[in-house]
Image (cartoon, rainbow, N blue to C red; front, side, top):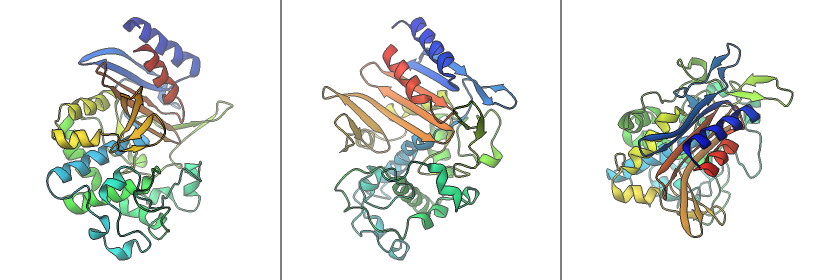
Length: 339
């Protein structure tokens, strides 16, 4: 599809569905299509812009995986390191002694999750008894899962797991002697030139940041400030812009964040999720007819939906950032149909 046709299709989709967010598609250094729609602040009717910051929920797991791989590259950690050789065993009394860093990265560790997507579907319900405003550091999540039993033996299957990425973030803190968010901001965002991205508290958001909105069927809405942890961390919820997200893909693929060996390992399809979907380290990998179609990250929270991808056959990168609970998936489908 020609560039103008793609722009027109994206515009039509945004108008038809009430999409609120930004879309950016690039082929190399050239923008193929871009657009900003809806409001960053509905009450003030402040429009979204292409450089507006949006939460990206679990899309941030890629940042965590890169941080861990950087420490591996520096010799501070190994992918086959047993995490219970690093943590105090008393902190996790029921966890297997055999869990490795690789298994945490690939969601195959078998540890319990604080939000288990096999049995739970309402993320906001977690905060009914536990105030979300108390979750400002990675260690604040530990009481939610550290004394629960293992779900399965390490390495035996894939099970998407947020708690595993909390543990990876704690490893980054222990080995770097920085808070997790400081590490990512210094060693990933700064290295990529992602000047507008960061881990911000919901009660102290900087300018040009989109509020997240939970929109009901009758069109009424509330913000997501009481529905997600007050500050993101290793399992998700950084704030990024569409241009910054594409800078991340660019610098990663140019080997500016990791050397060739660790970059290749990060992008290796390590484990099946289903017949076409695989998982690397912090990144989903889609195959079609046995070939890699795309590397992609995505995230969904109340008031947040996010997709971003790199398509190796064409060299195209794309990012769809949305400050509604739904919207990014369908818009990403439209983009993929047009590239």
